[in-house]
Image (tube, rainbow, N blue to C red; front, side):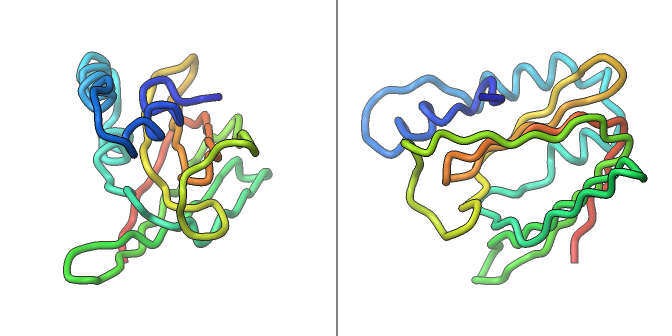
Length: 148
């Protein structure tokens, strides 16, 4: 599995009352510790709210080394916002899941719950987890975020 802070075990534990680790604080603390090494585009990616968004489109363009994700994200007053993430300089894209474990959510990938950014040799990593239990991992050199 790819997630370091927002794991499926943690997310499942959030569905019941009781104490749990503060994954948000750990993740935020980590990102703050590397923030000076992140370009503004990766910081914008980190700050782009995709929580409860549904993946509507995924396009891999291997010759250009680009990957496009399109999410519909619930927003205020019942409005939905469409957000596009275009990763460039992509050297790796992976998905994994545990077919025995997931949370309730819409069909397909499910709700996009949580995400993480990180440094890696020659670029950056973006990791995310869906309510279906699917985790994604992408290694890239740049990213552009857009909203309709």
